[in-house]
Image 1 (cartoon, rainbow, N blue to C red):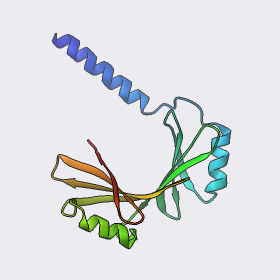
Image 2 (image 1 turned 90 degrees about the horizontal axis):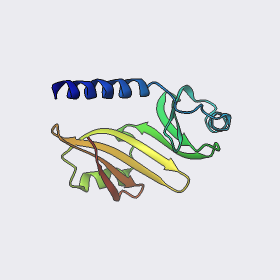
Image 3 (image 1 turned 180 degrees about the vertical axis):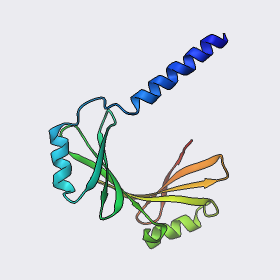
Image 4 (image 1 turned 30 degrees about the vertical axis):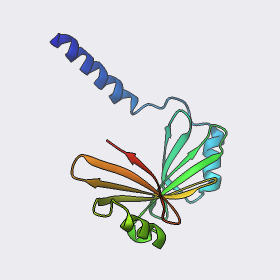
Length: 148
């Protein structure tokens, strides 16, 4: 039994270790061209195949961004990593008035898409309670997502 468990652990390690470095598909030219057109000043670009979209992580004006494009090269969304000071006043107010006000604020991200704009705040309380909070630009908490 111990040998079976050990074998499964080794196989799992090899699978996860090797798959994190391999692209599943080649990034289509339509996608890279669309990225260059939308973010001509983007530097340090790295791509990941997320199966349903292609994700570019890059820097723009010294700030980390992440954008997704479908396989036709159509832009889907962009995330911009920001500081707490860059949150709009209504979002800061919504966070302060939420039940998560006393949780430690770890990261702040502006998320924009074709029909949306929201702010994602990663908070944690202790070592086990971690959540993503999604606020609209008016400061209303729209969604909470538990993270591991």
